[in-house]
Image 1: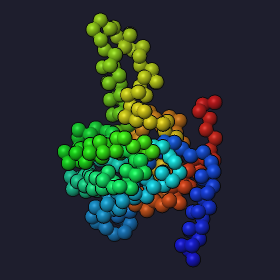
Image 2 (image 1 turned 120 degrees about the vertical axis):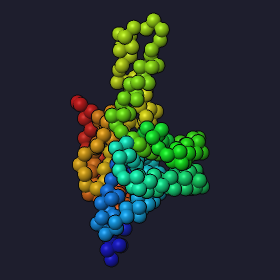
Image 3 (image 1 turned 90 degrees about the horizontal axis):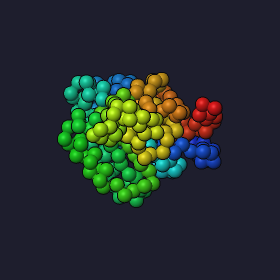
Length: 257
């Protein structure tokens, strides 16, 4: 009976959401894997990371269904690199397995999913870099949904990288400092961010009940709507995703006006 009620409610909510404006770019902070494991008495968090990785299948399907154009998933922060080596290995192994499987999946290709990987990728193990590179190359011609994996990512590091690359592009023999500084505009910086070329970030979802962004897409989130879900990432359901979209639709986006 409960399952039937859940199905009917989800169906009704989906119908409501499909009738309103859908965010073109959604960012998701995949949080709560370790908490999920502890709540279930698992000392080894590897199972939670594997379940969290499997959740990507669902999220991509939901985005395709609602015609979301881009989703950026924060899978692993640059600060996470300081965790115990065994835990870092468990996270990256789960990411490698899932991304490799998705990139080889006929359904992924048929749905038009394109992968991007952003962050300080040079800090990752060669095996992880190889998997990400192959996924990007294999899906480069797809354009229905761009899935950006933020891994070894930090928001401050992204802004620093963007500024460095912008300044390098403007530095020419005989070019003085003031000329370079004149090029440092918000629009110019946008072009050097990891997310350059993607739609504006409309909505950020964070799971696990934590109410902070922790540096996720710092520059891009200036005008984003924020939604915090109490559900841990491995338990995140379509119903939770639809509720986030509904909350987005109910807000009046002022953009400073």
